[in-house]
Amino acid sequence: MTSHDRVHADPVPAAPTAEIAWQRTVAEHLAAVVFLAPAPRTVEMPLAEASGLALAADVVAPRDLPGWDCSAMDGFAVRRSDLLTAGLSTEGGEVVLPVVGDVPAGAVAPDGLPAGSAVRVMTGAPVPPGTDTVVAVELTDVPRGPVPLPAQVRVHGLPPLGEAVRGRGSDVAAGQVVAGAGSRLDALTLGSLAAVGVSSVPVHSAARVRVVATGDELVPLGSEPGPGQLVDCNSWLLHGLATSLGHPCERVTLNHDDPERMAADLPSLLADVDLLVFTGGVSAGAFEVVRQCLQPRGVEFGQVAMQPGKPQGVGVLDGVTVLCLPGNPVSAVVSFLAFARPWLDAASGRPSPAPVRAVVDDAWRKKPGRAQFMPVVLEATDGRLLARRRSSDGSLSHLASRLAGVAGFVVVPADADGVREGDLVEVMMVPGS
Ligand SMILES: Nc1nc2c(c(=O)[nH]1)N[C@H]1C(S)=C(S)[C@@H](COP(=O)(O)OP(=O)(O)OC[C@H]3O[C@@H](n4cnc5c(N)ncnc54)[C@H](O)[C@@H]3O)O[C@H]1N2
Ligand code: MOO
Image (cartoon, rainbow, N blue to C red; front, side, top):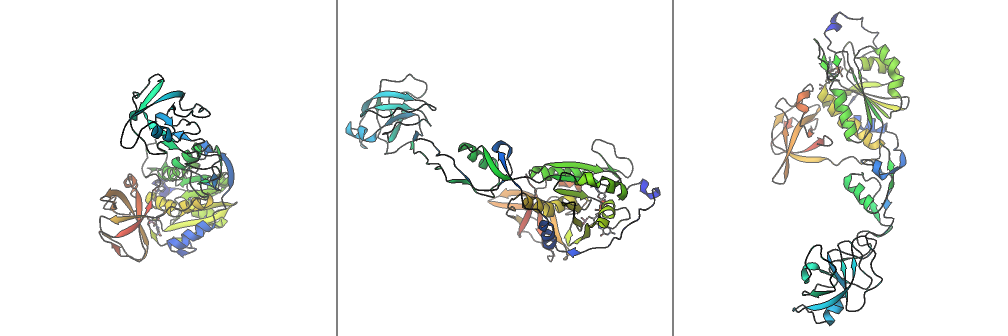
């Protein structure tokens, strides 16, 4: 905590120890955090409200799509053998057929097609039983566009059998799986289910999240910071990440460093959420409000071999998983993506995203010992995804303004001493970027 007036302020609270409960690799801490995720809840939800959620079961088509044999073109439905009989061949010629009906999209097709006749059909409209081919309007003497139903049609091209006829169920047959269990209801999956008429789906509900920024140096967005103060950005960063992953999230700022006051607020902070995320006040200073409040209550504070994001806390209070992330803004973002996101994925039944691989368009050194999360911009060039450092100041944890435009973080393994131009690396992506 860096508040200007703290220098002369309250006595130091009766501090628990600043003991380091554990030292872990990123993989070890990830496993410890994800282990705490509860089994996903399953609910039946209207499709319209299920965007972004994961399906809890396979969803099958309740009916065939298309629901009838239909036309793929504006034209005339015929029996192809009638065209051949009337003298049309692949060599050429033309035939005239009487037009005995009109089927716009949305209409019901006539029961059948009298021999040697045609029915005008529009794209998507049902074709009468017995027809097997649609002659596009361009292959006839009928002009394109809004013309009255002609009494007859002159056909001057022989389409192949089955041309422009879509069979019933040719997209999906009733009972076939449209989207499998675990699929995320992105726009296209949601639209597919709407197409087959699925209006409600079994899903894993999103997790309810509360993010709490702490520190008496913080002032809310819109206020002018005084000496030693700064605008809280972490609550916005973490709230934005949680909501962009589709989890409802409440944003709280506690601009004090009083562990007793925080303890009094704990029941309401823990109420009605699945995941409570603190940021700030976890390290080794004299006024680490989160550590001082939560360590005596069983939350463990330790160090993870990563940069940024070394100090971390984790525990369970009243059945709620509590993650305590560092206060430096880049550290908070990296920690959220590395640990809170996988917890959220597990608790909401979503598969972890496949790692994105990119080629480094840059080179930098690092000290071996801690995994590094380097903020990068990504650029697709010549079929390759190039990762370039967002800033030559690298992965420094306080560079809040340089988070703008960051697409992800190149994960440099702990034992590496740097990255060379052309290296293929894994990128931990910022959701929605
Ligand atoms: N003696 C040691 N000092 C520190 C260590 C250590 O091991 N020994 N670890 C360092 C590392 S690494 C990190 S990361 C930070 C983490 O510190 P805290 O989690 O206790 O965070 P604070 O001290 O509260 O804040 C750090 C920094 O970030 C600013 N901050 C905090 N919250 C916000 C917010 N919501 N919006 C914007 N900025 C925020 C805060 O003002 C500080 O400047 O500890 C190192 N120290
Ligand atoms: O871990 Mo801290 O986040 O390096 O600055």
